[in-house]
Image (cartoon, rainbow, N blue to C red; front, side):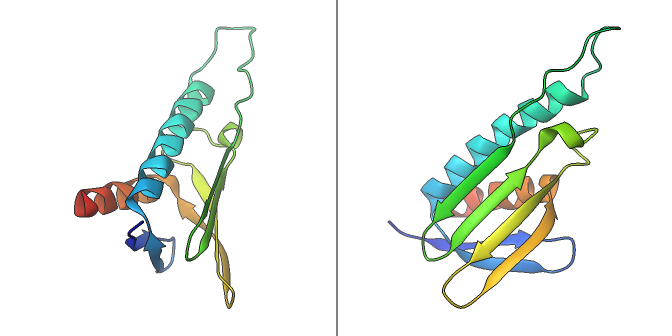
Length: 116
């Protein structure tokens, strides 16, 4: 399986690591589902009813690096305000930080355009 570098832009700085196109497509599908959950939570329910809690995104990828992305859709008022918790690690380093969901979506889409 071939890999290409994926750059994720963070709130401050960026991180670049090897990532496969197949994994990027799987991550995009998982984020698309998360967006639907975020929209369900942000939609105002009819008076007197509660919005059902939505399951979080818990994406994991293991390749040259381990990537984990977590987002609880129940705590964000809109999809555009949402942030994800990123953990990227290999044998010598571990990075845990937040990233804006909309920026991660843009980065994944740009990566998929480049790799085809």
